[in-house]
Length: 398
Length: 209
Image 1 (cartoon, rainbow over the protein chains, first blue to last red):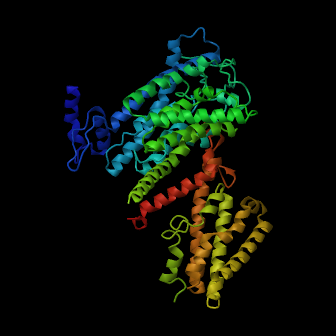
Image 2: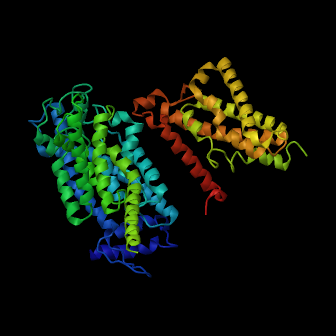
Image 3: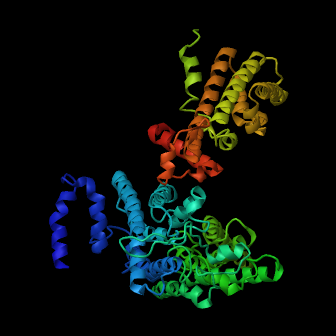
């Protein structure tokens, strides 16, 4: 560590005002504070000293995402092997390696495009680099299907960072979740790469890893899509998905969203460290369960309404959204009561969209985006009702 | 007073940029969203609005001293409605396809805020010639934004311009795809916002303190 510190101190003058590499000041600054806690303290006013700053929070979320990412990589290899019919002959390690090779370019593209824009804006506005993209950059590749082309991903990332974040004033000022805006952009602009049944499974071998799927136009829908089409929730093998498959995530889907177990690991870390609010998380599940029970009993003809409530929860992006997206402290409701309302709204809305809208088999993304927009209003109502209640109490006393 | 004195030039120029009806005054947004998914209807719409604003401005300006103040809005509406009906009939006769594409939006020019705004704010106080220039300026200012928005929406949404394929087939074979978002109404919002953003960044006097 000492060596690193010395090295940074040695090259630092180059980046300061008048130095020859001044154009890269924000880049240097970003990396320095990423590696070491900033050394400067506030000069005036009352300060709260806390060991955790936003950079540490972001790093914690990234760590919490790693189990989902790893299992997602393995799942990509597994689905590829199932599609090619080589499950018996492929080891789990080569499946994982294949998934890694497929996923890494996506992560790299998201980070390069997103951070590139962030650094440019920081340099241009002479501000410190915002660290918010650390999480968005890994979330974006995790919520798209494996068949999403890299240029679409780059375009969506650029769109999301510029229009959902920078125009509102950067990290901490955005009103909607940046990663979800990237996904929503792909969803509306290029629906063919994010829905339908030919994008969920990788069908080409890369560098000798994985297998070429020989069937032309191999298709495989997600379980929710199958249900929406009136079929049973079947997996890539054509057999009914077992609960075990659904929970461990061995089914077609977006890269990071399939495995409930991996998401639960991340959720535990987030809850244990207090980064995510258990109130939001819990009420998302309560909302989802309540809504699916309601539909199950009121709409006997609708096939999506008829799958049991626990399948609603473990299929699709419900868990991933509940744990990593809904709890985003920037875009969720801030008041404690508001968090319950906000979470419940997300869960209920997600199931509502799944059941009532035949065009969208998955509703989690739109539900979270909608509630993001409503969150400030929820907060306003909660605060106002508190103000009114207290005002009433005062007038009663007098 | 010359035909294009300084004041008249101002009447023509300011609505193009500094007082642009769409990007600065935020008027006529509804039709700017509705007719801009293709370039052709946007051009026709811009042209129609330009003609109607200019003519209505001249007519109202001519009779401005005889209009009783209490019923001036009704008089203005009658003039605009007559002009809109004329334009609509002409379009139906000579450009039927476009008039079908524009459907109700030609009729809805009557409710376009730019019209009533210019009649109230300019034509009621000014002579016919400056009023005519003001109408042309505002119409062109509106049409300009429509055409810019429609250009991007049609180009990226369908890969064509005015119906002619611009992006070659080889691009599509290489994996390029049309952007479906561009054909939806939100894209018009985003594009207009971008134009407003660009304009405000260029012209500091438009920025709020």
